[in-house]
Structure formats: C-alpha cells, structure tokens
Amino acid sequence: MRLPLLALLVDAPAHGYELKQALENLLGSAYPQPNVGQIYVTLSRLEKAGLIEGEDVEQSDRPNKRIYRITAAGREAVDAWFEESTAEPRVRDEFFMKLALAPYTGTVDQIALINKQRRHYLNTMRNLSKLAAAEDRGNRVAQLLIEGAMLHLQADLDWLERCQEELE
Image (cartoon, rainbow, N blue to C red):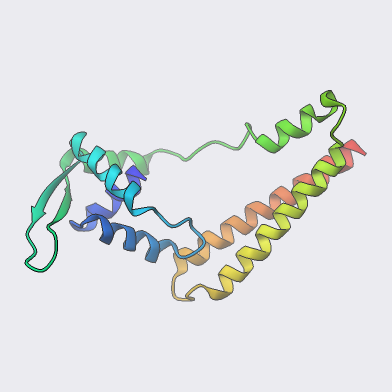
C-alpha cells in the first residue's frame, strides 16, 4: 500500500479518503477495496519516514482534514519502485507444497486435491467474468487487471492438468 499511495501523491496532494477513492476508481471492483483505516495508518508511517508531509486544513462545517504532499525522498522512492522488476515467478506455491506433501500424510489423495483446486480456480474465473461484465468499459485499467487475473488462472488450470497427467 505504501508505494501506490506515494505514486498517487506524485500527481497532486490529497487526503486519505481521496486516495482511497482514487485507488478504487483506478482499479475497479476486481481489486480488493482498500481499507480507509489502513490507508491512514500507512500515511502516518510514510509521514514519519519523511516520504510525505501532512498539513491540517480547517473546515468550518466538518472536522479538520489532513492533506498529504510527497517529499523529494518520497518521489525518489516512487522512481526506484518503477525501476525495479516485480516479484519473480511463484516458486513458493502453497498448493504445490500441499500436493508434494500429500503422499506423506497417507490421508490425502493428490488427484482429489487437484480437482478441488481446479473447482476453486473455475469458480474464481466465473466470478471474475461477472466482474468484467459489470465493470465500466471505459476503465481500461480495471479491465486489464481482470484479464490478467483470468490469464493467470488459465495458466494455473493448465498446470493442474499437467500435474494430474504426471501423477495418474
């Protein structure tokens, strides 16, 4: 959450709720909605780390709000984030660990485990398809997020087929 909030603040100063709304509008309904409490906790930590500066703004008819601006150090952190490659391929996969260890338990059938995981992935794909249909067509970022998740799921389904072939 740290770096996405910093990236949004590069564009313009904002308060926590505006940042929450910006993330929701950008990423759409497929992405887990950020918790506003977590956003404010993260903003407080970013401020303590010197990556943003906050300023209280008085409001006559509401409680004061705190507007955050990115600092030079915060901008450097965002630039460094965009320079880094993202995480490597999933080698530490929890499902694969279950599959590999199932024979050691004597109680878990590997093919049943694969079938259960397959059903889970197919259910998730159905839910994503519904989200894609309901998502605003103009929000290309949200559509790409859903499409990427579905492509990953399809690859996971193909991999499950490969595992089943190997283990039967």
